[in-house]
Image (cartoon, rainbow, N blue to C red; front, side, top):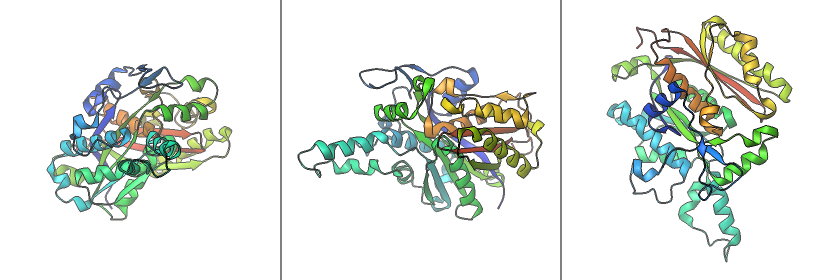
Length: 366
């Protein structure tokens, strides 16, 4: 199969709805973290990075959105933005388009609310059946496909802060296997009081005070030939993804370093060709692991680190997807040489490490 490229992409983020607000915010290095409305979002955190004034009905219409939870609304909106930007050709053969969407556990709020209703109601079955679909993990991916008429393979991926990278890897495998001609790939996460408490209890030390964020990003992966034929700009090539597991936090640095070395070897590239790195900036007992591993393999000379946690908060399952969107935002800069390499890395406290290696489009490709 031909190599895959990134062409159209979209984002729903604390900077606003759409790729342009995200691109502008990331390039300016502007923090989107602010004080939370304690009446609307009680819980352990006083600050967070939320999509401003987000309501799914405002972006995809009121019909069918009454029972739609927040993470599904974010995902359906992001997919719709991508399809609108990519042009009608994308949905002219819907059975040839796949969708791979990453999530944490689906909507934690929906799961907990539905469970609580079954416990506090007069009867366990006195629950709102219209809200049950929100409790399954693949709700966001399924609704995105149904809403926008995507009829190819539909997959939900969950992998902690590596979710965006594992979704990217799975999407590439779908294409290599001939299951689709093009594939939409991304990840989404919502903010809720329930998620906030779960995160707080799962953290340690100073990491407990680090604010949460939410959002989602979706990318179109296709061949360069298909992108050019449809008039879509090639922004970057996906070279490879690599993953490792580790048993102890002390092994995380070596695991990620091995991922990066394997990725460079697979791509036939040298460490000095990597110009931009976007780490997930994992905190707690894994704080500093990514930066150390990157230094072990790439050094620091001529390398730009693009950290987004201080700007967007901890976006959990959407972390790697938003990192990838940040990389694409900067690869559009005139300062980035054609063909320059970029790396997205992530380490998760559950014992996984991974990376994705990209190459900026050459003058011939773009």
